[in-house]
Image (cartoon, rainbow, N blue to C red; front, side, top):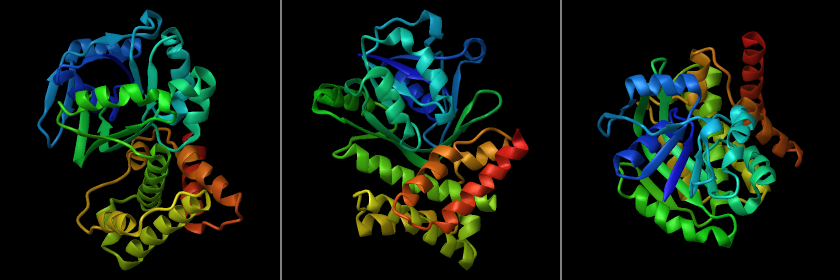
Length: 304
């Protein structure tokens, strides 16, 4: 089974690196400058699992051929249009598993490649790419969740899961990938919202009662929006999420906050803006989420 990974950042570089280390046939789709850097320095991952350094198999867009069984997309959502153009030479073979935040990417990918060829995927990880190209992994989160959106995609699930099980990260086949996408959206909107609003880690926020309450209320806002659309979250699972994100020693900050610290573009439209528009369809007020969105809109105005 041949795997193509678009994106060698905190998600694609981490999971793709460990897949290649385990013996999987992995190729990374990269830009020419990134290719030169990776050829020179190799792919490096710093992780509590143990550091990784390997020579990755690389390809640039105009060298692509329709030979891949699975295509993993792990770019930022604001880079998706360009990614779709890069993948045009792969059409005719392969199923795409996107590991992007929010939900807007599915419609775009369905329109371009056909819904028969697009699964759903969720990446649970706290990681980033440093200026020198090194991938840094920060916590125990290291799981891929993926699942079919139509029954004809079932044939790929078990073979891909078996490949993942040979690595150091966790993987699971979802019984309801749309529900899992909503769960991740709620989680990332809460964590990204709070850490960018306050410019702090979850632990620093939760050390203050008002911060802990804000985190809790923000999560409840996001959870309520999902429930309007028929995606009800289990109370025990939600309580465990709240326990984890309000842990007073948590060093976690969202990748969006790391992007802010680098003066980089962010995914606030796809994570906050789209979720707020979903809430507005039901005339649901989400004041904390809206404040997070405004904070990032103002950040973008200053950035540009």
